[in-house]
Image 1 (cartoon, helix red, strand yellow):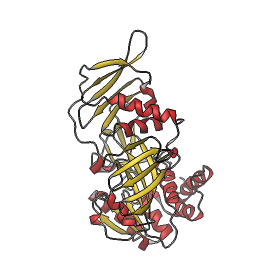
Image 2 (cartoon, rainbow, N blue to C red):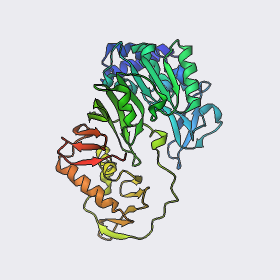
Image 3 (tube, rainbow, N blue to C red):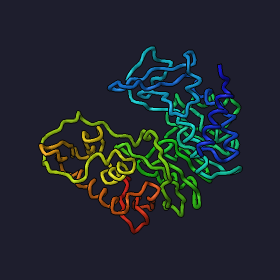
Length: 380
């Protein structure tokens, strides 16, 4: 059996070769921090071709558990807010509510944050504690504070960190409500996605401080942004290259909705095909244009459902194989989306790294190219 250290070194070698690990100090953390210590309750693996998706438990007693720990993969650790791998005896369904994020992303984000020895960091979302341990290894225990909303996750992370000899400041509470936090930090890193940047985060780092967070939404589109705080309630930043996604912070999750019924509406032919929403940035632009809409399906068979108003947009094909859209409700969802997509295409269809964001007390605005370019307000 391959030893944990050998697997850890092999993972670090792969990440280094891929360009995801180019800082020697973070490389040492990757080689020293045992990810398996944070997955002792196991993880859950999605079974292919199951609808709805079923998840099979993989525990330390199972063959392949340790090798799975050192895959560069996000590992589901909780379903429906309470089920863990050790609670299951067979594949089961549910909604993932916690995970251990793929190591390449965790390490890439810590490096993108740009912090060095002596700087204090606030981490939003302790999760399993693996990311927290990496931060402690690089920055020192006294410079890392981590907040976790799920009490069970927080307790297990605290136990694993203590076992390894790490002693960061750990807080159980809602990291979006910064009244639970009292500190003056150089930077903030979030391991959950948010629909907008909580203004309390800007206060935690103060003028010149850095916030690294993933903006997400109910269409399942995400963008990683690095912000510099420029004043009370003010910040500006750019979205970073690559692709980054996290589970939405629980307070920003989609509220319950009634069962979806595709009622009749106004049907027209659309020149912009819905498959454009399968594109990473195309879906991002659509979400900016219709921030309270949920996206179901994909390709030519998908539905946009606005959670706030009940408005719908769904697609079909007529006898001449032209794509048609049916819209219903007070908001013409597809009209809003196609207008945004047209502006994006006119700008040259840039990746999200061509986008930026300006935060002010009155609004949070995402734009293409510059503040004078096409822009959309986030739901605050």
